[in-house]
Image (cartoon, rainbow, N blue to C red; front, top):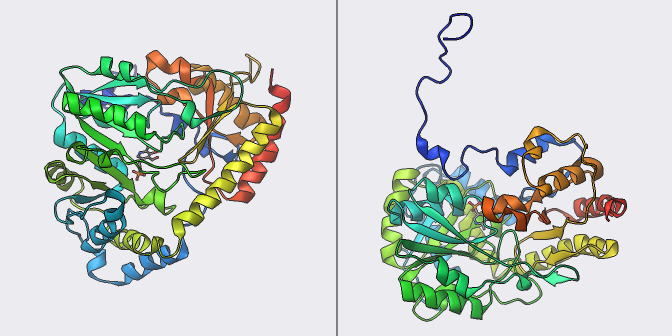
Length: 429
Ligand SMILES: Cc1ncc(COP(=O)(O)O)c(C=O)c1O
């Protein structure tokens, strides 16, 4: 009963307890550092989406699909045949095998929903899923909503000072072994990595594969940035290591490949016994994925090689990366040079800002990096994402040293952001 005697009806039926897990109800970093909360002229290098359109020949395919009849209706839950064929043609040489479009490929509503469906299909209550920290934040609720228990193994950052590349973030195979228990079901390997930019080496993947084999684990190979590696770095697919095809599901995303994150088209590639139950799950979650944009994604994969699209895209991203790193170099700031994906981790531990700065409440209760990123956004007009968000509470202090700057923006915007970031000079200790 409220003070005026009227029955409070604002919370009549309690929501499900599963929302109390996996930080599902916590205010997430994306809503705190949302454009709506920041000054209107702030340049957004926070959330990882592009400020440019997909290639014209891909959007034209989307427009064409919208003019059809079948393309506007339900698709087969496995995905439209044209897209499954395009995935097969593109990935057959990648996996050195003839993929079966009926049993080894599944189109999903973005990589995210595909990963969720794998968890639905394979996790029993209490099953453990190992992920390397920092981790893509969606893994956490996707695992806990399905009764799984996340288990964290840190990627160790490079020693302080001096230049470093993402390759210097390392895994400790003994730590990984120690994290495995009789309840471990799965390990997520994200390469190229968000937010570190690390491209796992063959030796690292062989070490992980040997443990997966020894303890009979499924490997979820999150390779949504597979077409975005730099400096000639080889992207090794863990599914291609001896014996690993049988226990690996590889995750891809049209959003990342074709600058179309809002399309929500992704795919899973793996052995029949993983794809079949995952198909059953995705069919009950979304039934099928967006039909016209499946056609557009198919056009993208069909033409990408002959157009040299991914080589060009890599060169464009290399130029974008350099605009920020040149500025950080000029300022003498330490950062991790990413060998893949489109994020730079800037070491913000030497940034000084007044303790009594008017920070909003949402930022005050969090790590120092939340305040540092907020300060940079407000004082310099460039937003970034505090990296402690990608860690569990116990290890959040590792992430507090970094802000993540996304360079999936056009060069003019990045140059403007770089000019503003030069103003960091007066705030460095
Ligand atoms: C590592 C990683 N995996 C999966 C996803 C989800 O991709 P999608 O947008 O296709 O759902 C993202 C998106 O940021 C990501 O960074």
